[in-house]
Image (cartoon, rainbow, N blue to C red; front, side):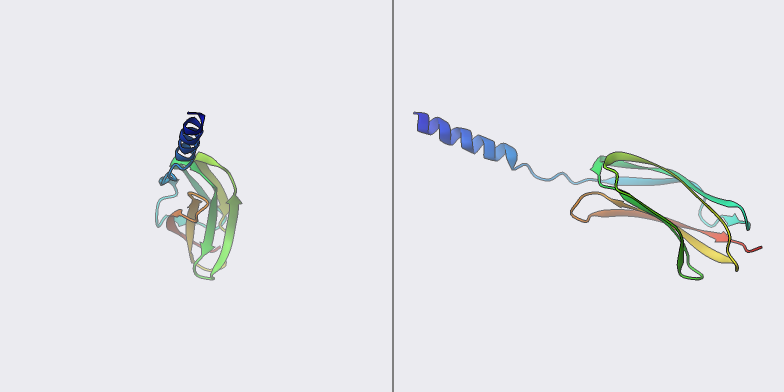
Length: 127
């Protein structure tokens, strides 16, 4: 009898502890800037928005890349575990030539490498 109780208890514990990993979804929303906005020299490119996940996510990266030169003009990595992130990042346009700048938010949904990404481009004018 006690042997049966022990076996049933062990089976119950193993079934409870073997739950399937939850698939995390994420929605990235940009409020500003609008795609293809023109940013005068010395003005601020202000990326605002949000990331809303269905469960806890494992961080995100924000990168602004000058596609004309191929160089990153702004980059921040955030190792923050949360279901929601508020986006509020700024960079002052200081390009030497008219440039297309790509703004990217890349979210790490889980530790298995599943990612969600959103990007827009703006046109930055020189002095």
